[in-house]
Length: 389
Picture 1 (cartoon, rainbow, N blue to C red):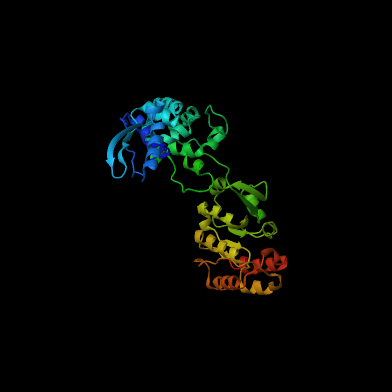
Picture 2 (cartoon, rainbow, N blue to C red; picture 1 turned 90 degrees about the vertical axis):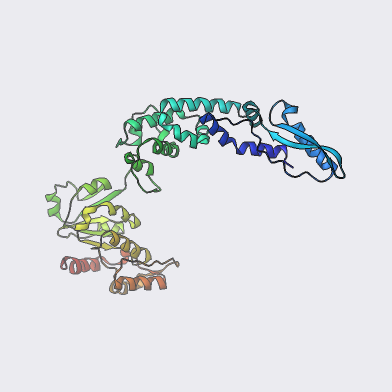
């Protein structure tokens, strides 16, 4: 048979539905969907349960659930009273039972505020009553942000540049709820359909600026430095600015290791890019690189070939340098044994690269690119890259 604690649990479970009824103005009480359950066996057990139900009912406390009893002639127990119906008859009884009188008053105030300030949130309210309560201490500021984006759907500013009268970290600390609200009120064509990424999803989705990854560029040809009037030969720039350049037909050497990047020799008609491992993915959006000869120099290990395959999936013209059997055999004494790692079917390797990748995978070997001598690297680049392009 149902107990007072189970009645309380059931009452708490339907709280979101009650709040939705408040938003819609629907009738919710009396609420009588409390399952009575089967009677306990034995006189003493039945008396104990019924007495506990009576002691916690509205008849005893003056609020809460109403207990309606019926007298029945039970086999072996004689005439006994047991629950026939349990109900909560009024909103006041319900709120006092859950100790939520003050919470509902604030909820109703917030509903009025939201409807008056941003009426487009009315449908959102019906679907998210608990969120209204969860953020009850910050609706004034949340609505300020909503109103701003309604008037300025593509701000192109950093979050802290937005001219909204809120504290500087408010948006950063409330991205989740703000994203939920803005998606509810802005037309779908007014926010960017970016993939759900780990970083800067909010900023990208709502056309805000964010701290972009930097691309490090070295000019390997002094004639190019003069041609493009670069004051420096080693430059780091946000990826969005790098995309605006147009160096079509110039060659690009991408080195995964920093020391190899900064020691690449002078090369005619060439630039160098610092790959920095899997961060190379940021180059995918630089569409004009598709028109450039690209040479990639990575470690002779599983990750190096995975990065090569990834880069070649963006730019099929990519040629690997010093990632071949000859180079590995030349510096094999410097290769180290590494922990076994998961291999993948890499779709963008040449047969020769695939063979070396398989060998390194099977034998758990790694030859770091900085183990290759400078003299060998210079001669390799001059003979394989310069003369071949």
